[in-house]
Amino acid sequence: MNLEPLFQQTFHSASTVHASSPGRVNLIGEHTDYNEGLVLPTPIPQRCEMLFSPRADDRVEIHSVQMQTRAGYALGAEIADHTWLDYVQAITQELQRAGHNLRGFNAVVSSDVPLGSGLSSSASFLVTIAKGLRKLFDLEITDVQIAQLAQAAENGLVGARVGLMDQMACSLGKAGEALLIDFRTLEYRSIKLPETMELVILHSGLTHSLAGHEAGTRNYKTRRLECERACELLGVASLRDLELADLERVAALPAPFAGRARHVITENARVLETVAALEAGDLQRVGELFYTSHVSMSADYDVSEPEIDLIVQIAGRTAGIYGARLTGGGFGGSVVMIADKSQGRVAGEAVMLEYAQTTGQSPRLLSPAV
Ligand code: GLA
Image (tube, rainbow, N blue to C red):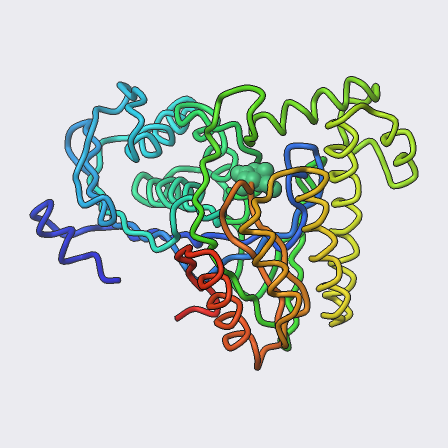
């Protein structure tokens, strides 16, 4: 999308900087990042795009295409107002806290990463702002630091206690490759995706929020607290300290902690197995690992929904699909499927149609890109 005409119409001058970041889909390794574990995300075709220009004063003025509105604030006076502007305020606040010298700027943003889809609409927005400001003000800041500041922004002013996977994926991800990240060391390496494979991504039509705060209810924050409690009960600092050999000890924990810990431990093992299967071009095996991961997320970690389980079930009996699983934080969002290159679109459309007819939901096929 060419945003320049809109930029000039809004601010009566040309933009000087363009920045962009993709959304991401996590192939496997779910709810492991904040447990010092392993993840395997890859960029999606949908992205956040922004144009910027500097201002002479300390105002931030930004127009959002999707929100169809313009909003602004003064740098240094960031206060959460529980609108989309919080993302902008949060990242300028973190950049200033980290000692970077900002001045005012104008910006226009447009994103086709669907909100609340489990595909990192927030992280791609935050990373795009930070990358744009890096160019605009010549900031000395690496892509990893951008990811860390974007996480701090989300944990801070936005108020969602998310891990670091999404921001790393949006900041460092390259098309055609997945990023194997180890959150114990922050080491990462690129895994080339087999060319015989197609990723099919279906948004269920159920949106989620990661900012749920009510303790005890089914939300992201509750799962994090349950992992912390499981660690206390097991006498370890992190669930990453445990391996498959510890599963017997884990099974002795009371509900729901046994299931939560079992998911994280087995999921870390599945990430490594998936990497090996991808490197061997063994899509059948990748598919099996996807299904096992989904069952673990649904039964042990309890972050799926009946509708999402249904998509995975339909995928299981659709020709051309090797495997399917809920991707992202859960409680709604999207399913990622591995398909044969030549059959991805047809298979994805078949799953979407049957799911829509059965549930009355309005799903969207996000990949293969239309
Ligand atoms: C969300 C969070 C990530 C990660 C996933 C679950 O996407 O932002 O940090 O915890 O959920 O894997």
